[in-house]
Image (cartoon, rainbow, N blue to C red; front, side, top):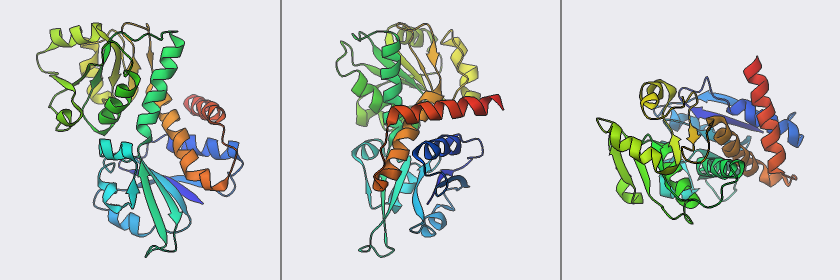
Length: 279
């Protein structure tokens, strides 16, 4: 069986490392391969047309998380809420014209949510007092907003503020606050100091010029979870990548009937990333 990550650019994607580690742990590495496919919005249709029964599924990264939806037979509730799909599961279906059924979901939300719970556990912090802030306004930011809403549902403050250069259209749909990066440093600092959670979804190139003026920490990863009031440290985006990949693997392999131990898969993926970082 084959699987892949699609989008552009995908050269630096860690997904093959994560999925391959999981396949080895599940004992299917000899028959399952995970690769990278450079696919743009212009070439997406051609990619979708070449799918066949040899595909188990594929991961979707930018800029295709919304564009891919039109080609799918169904999408999950969370993918509908965020208008973003990062995982497509391919199953054979004789009742379909092409013999395939394509279902999409958003495991980014699960991944971000697991990082929040993981960090709260590390801090031994159960009673949430403040709200949260999200830096950025793209598809990952919208997924982060969905995850934060769940995490903060029992908090005394459920306020979530998105901080970005431009106000995203989806802000009103999910009933969140918004603050511009431009000339609002004092307001942003107030939000940071009163928030339980802070999430940056900004690429490092954009983040390194903005974040040092907002946080005392630096953010060297694609997505960071910082806890200004709770933890004196931040948790790197690789934790989110691992957790969302675990769910992707589970969804793509569930038809095999294997014993799937999520904690074990998290462990082997973590080890694989550490090994890759030392190379």
